[in-house]
Image (cartoon, rainbow, N blue to C red; front, top):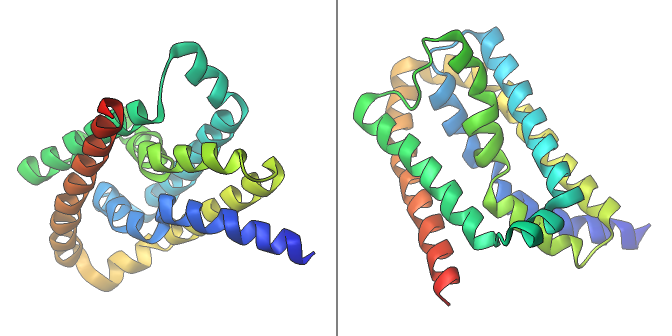
Length: 198
């Protein structure tokens, strides 16, 4: 039993750091600040389910797809970083990361960019790939699910956080967070390019 707990800890921590559930919360608030509480809950559910599906799919066929298409983890870093950078810059300039007046666009926020690449992006996929080579797959998936549950709980509490901070507070924090997100995106792109060139 102690060995299982130790294995869970060894896989949980890297995935927690890669997923950064607490750090994702302000970004979630940014994308859903003008939405109703029920829509925010629905978006939280969709984002978590999307992240779960992407993670499981990657665990199942990630290595095969990478090998077949000649894709490296560095390629994921560059692609995910570009997506996040575009969203961050757009928000900083226009106060909108996405045009969500259209109901169909509003629904997809939970899938992209929240579910992926935010919750399960290049860092999480890379961590899953590395951990699967070091630990039993059941342990890796269990740690992944535990992290997703933590992320889901935090997303579901977003309404209370909005009520506490107020719209002005959320808007101000969102600007800072999006600036940090842009920096994170540039870091992802830089790491990906350096890995490719190495």
